[in-house]
Length: 73
Image (cartoon, rainbow, N blue to C red; front, side, top):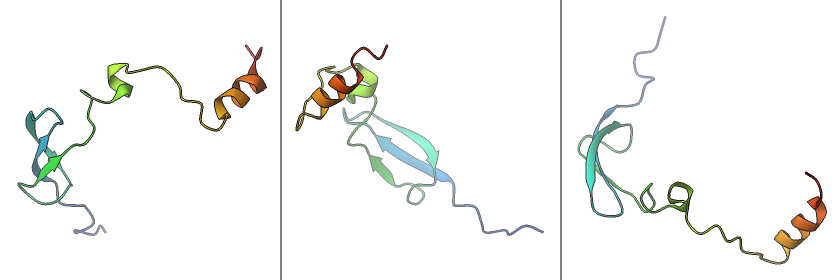
């Protein structure tokens, strides 16, 4: 015996990237025809673009980490 209404509504939405380009996809976000505007996407986020590899040392945490594990490998 299964429950009929346990699955979320799956419908088409419009996704707008940070550069203004857009595409239509299926999602459980919002309702049919809603627009999801992204603040971060693969065209701008350093995780996908390779970005700046410089690490910020806030409060000496990076220095302490490096000192603790120096010579580990």
